[in-house]
Length: 119
Image (cartoon, rainbow, N blue to C red; front, side):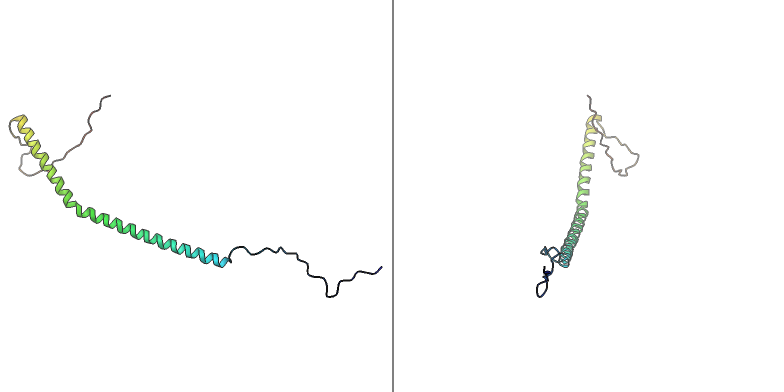
């Protein structure tokens, strides 16, 4: 019985690895893409913070500019209340009374108390 011999030129190599195609991009491409997206995100966040600070500054200056108008409105309201109190006092008592011993102006203070609610 003759012994089997390899064919001329030898056997073809044995494929022992899996032949899977590469899926996706190379890792470097993903790293560059991620860095690009993060850079854009940080840039937009910085713009948002800058805009927020600018709006807060604008709001603060708007309030500062409104203070004189609000103070004048409060002063007019106090004068109106004072004159109404004087008129009510004169109507009830028939004469004006002095609360203080001096003519120096004392800024009135109003205490707002809740109305008594009965159940």
